[in-house]
Image (cartoon, rainbow, N blue to C red; front, top):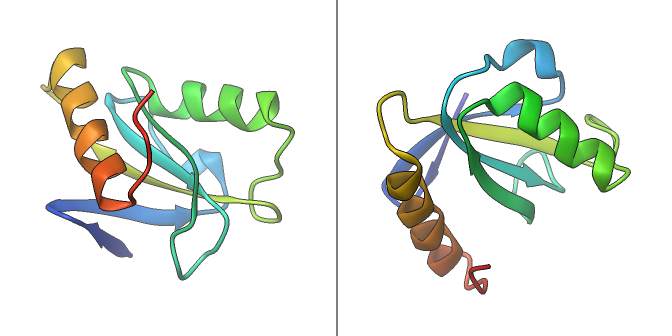
Length: 97
């Protein structure tokens, strides 16, 4: 399934990390399966590994407390991904870290 957030088409929501490859990208860990209520918005060079760490650090349970949607960036540099995160924060009216 595709979730459109601004100009970004995220894949998800996923309730199983096995469906997410370790590629560069953006991720949103969110509360609801159908309506995106962000818990964590981040970017990383390794999606699967970083998402697993975030879920564990925040004591969440994928498929129960949260779901995850991802946007693969493939060739984008970290600085580019950070700019994309700022854009998504603006869409959700969240403060950037």
